[in-house]
Image (tube, rainbow, N blue to C red; front, side, top):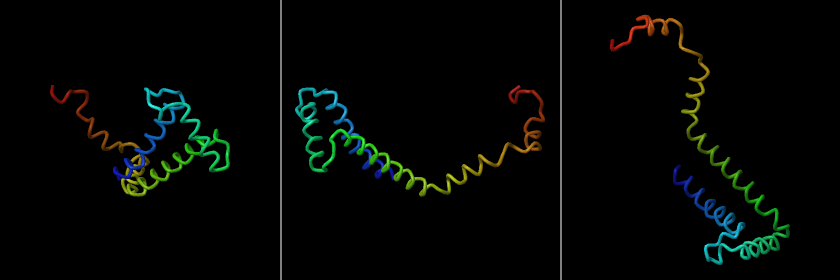
Length: 113
C-alpha cells in the first residue's frame, strides 16, 4: 500500500512544485520554471481542451482531491476490520465501575511507596 501511496504522491509533488514555482516565477535560472513557460503550457492545454487556461489548475486540483479520496477509501477498505474494532472500542463506553473500583481500591497510596 505504501508503494501505491508513493506512486500517487510523487507526480503530484512534482506537478504542484513546478506549478507554484513557475507561477511565482521562482526559476533558479531554469527556463522550465519560468513564468513564460508556465503561461505557454497552460495556453497550449487550454487550446487542446477548448477551455479557458485559467480553470485548468482548479480542474487538476479537483482531480487530485478525487484521486486522494479514492485512495483513502481503498486504504480504509483494506483496514476495515481494524477501523471497525477501533470504532467499537470508542462506542462501548467507559470502564465498568466494578473494574474501576478494583483498580483504585488501594486508595491514594503510590505503588512504589
